[in-house]
Structures are given as C-alpha cells and as structure tokens.
Image (cartoon, rainbow, N blue to C red; front, side, top):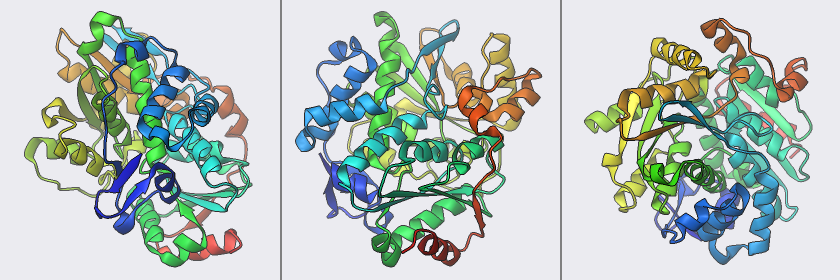
Length: 428
C-alpha cells in the first residue's frame, strides 16, 4: 500500500511507515495513492464481521503484511459487535459503543495498537494525541501495558464529560494524561507543533493516534460494511448515513467504504454549533469560527483535521461532492432529538442524537436512514439524565473507573511547557 502526503507530493510512504510516522512533512496527511473497488461486495456482505474485515484490510494494505498477520490483528482488535438497531420506521442506529471504552473509537484504537506493536518491533515509541472525548479512552486502553510504547494524551480541561475523563486519566503506567487550559483545537495545535519539532519528534520517537493515523481510518471503514450487511438486500442501495462529525475521520472512512463499492446512497455530515463544514458545503467558503463548547463535546472542533482527505477523495474522482450534505444542530435541537428518540423507546446521547436530527430533516420516504451511535449514553450520564429526566445506569467499564482519582497533570496552552513535561516524564 503506497500513501502520499497531501501537502508534499514527493513524500510517499508504505502503510507501515505511515502508521509509525502518523503525520507527514509539513503536517500533511497520508492518503492512499490507489483506492481500487472490491468486486465481491455481495460475498463480503454475507460474511461475519471479523472475516469480512480481514478481507477489507487485506485489500487495502495489499501484500505489505502477510494474510496470516492481518487475520491475527483483526481477530484481536474486533472482538465486540456493532449491531444495527431499528429505532423507528426506516431509521436505524449503528451502535458502535460495545467495545471496552464504550465508543466507536475502540475499533480504530485497538487496530492501531495491534499494528504499531507489530511494526515497532520492540523499539521505543511515544504516542502523542489530542482528544475531545472518546479518542483518549480508546487509545489509552488499546495501548495500556504494551512494552516500549508510552502514550501522552492531551485534553481540554473541563470540557469533556467527567466519566469520559475517568476512563483514561485513571490508568497510570505507560499512559500519561495532560489537561490543557484551552479548547480541543489548542490541544491539536500542540500535537502538530510537537511533530514539527525535530528534537521531540526524533528524540521521543513520536507517533499520533488521532484519526489522522491511517491505521485508525482503515479500521473504521469496516463497520460501514457491517451496517449494510445487517440490512435486507433490497434496502442496501437505499442507505443514507448521517455521521456525527467533529474531526471528520468517521465520515472519511464511510466515503472510503463507498469508494470500495459498498452500496451507500449518500451521506449527511451532522455537526453541532461548530459548523465549518455545513457552511462550506452551502457557500463554498472555508471560514472556521472560534470553537464553542457544546453538550456534544467530542464534536467541538472548528477546524477538522481529516477534511483534506475528503477533498482528496472528491478531487481524485473517487467521490461525488453532490452525495454529501451538511446539517448543523444547535443545543436546543440536540435536546429535542434526544427526547424524540426517547419517545420512540431509544435512549441516546447528544452526538448520536445530532446524527438522528440530520436524518429526520433530510431523509426521503424511499430511503433507509442509518445514524451512527458513537458512544454509550452513560458516558454522558449527567447530560442525558438532565435532558431526559430519567436515570441512566452505568455499564461495568464506567463503574470500574468512576471512583478512581484522576492522575492527569495540568498545563497551559504553551508548547514549551508541554515539551519540558514530555522530556521529564518520559525520562529522555
């Protein structure tokens, strides 16, 4: 698998190199130079999740890894289901929160950990990543206890739910967490600055586990196939996906799935008040505004890092821009959507509700709507209980960490402070 830096065309790498490096030169994203469609879609859709995902990853990665190795990596990473639940009429939720940290990012995080543990061959690696909520827990648990790999997670202080935070700030060991006095975009800037700093990048063997890492992105492609596989054959080519979108890795993966031949009709990019992309799809002007805090905090991103990959898919003729619409949902309508789902007998948290709202507004009668359930409602227990007026019980992973003390350090948004912390903490 050859990948090209979207900013520096001469910077071409293999899959293994892209996984190890994370970001390319000039903070460019790596993207496949060839996305060939698969010609056995019906056969794939008849397979179980793990077997199908093994075939998809083999197709994407090519002969760079042995078939036996890919089989093992997927078997170890995808050991939980992704059920498609009928919410009402022709609308379904693809529940992606049945993994160990109760969020969709378990798919990408666990596959990346499996890949990197193999590719690094025991050499020291430092994972530096920013999280607006669920990435932190997924990455922390996926890499926890892996020898020679340290993880540094930056998160916006006071801007993610307490239970989200507890899932990754209570582990210790090789997991180091830093609460940054700023928003998620400030955390992302720190990560990018570190990758531009040769002393840090080479001295600490930096890698990123954000959705900018190609291994996470490819893993996410697989659950779009799982969603379509659970629909009756006659409904599969009528499927419209509403994707709750923040950093836009999830939507990128869906478009790649369609590029491979999966019969998806179109996509809706559902955002909260951080509506850079919906506005761009309307007027063609890329005008990010300052990030605002919302109850759907994992989507509080005004400058989504994965958008250049979607532009590349469009520019290279893999995807027709007309098949993507946007929908921005404010706080009031997020709550309305949560209550509408409750009335239908389905309890949801704010992010999935935003996807549902996009479907309700835009879905045609002859279409089948699928919105992505990106996190378990209990991860946003306080918000969900306040909006819906009913108690939410905690699943076991949250019970286990809820009473533990946070081990996070606190830093301002200045890069030099973070650099000093990393060198001191990692003993370099």
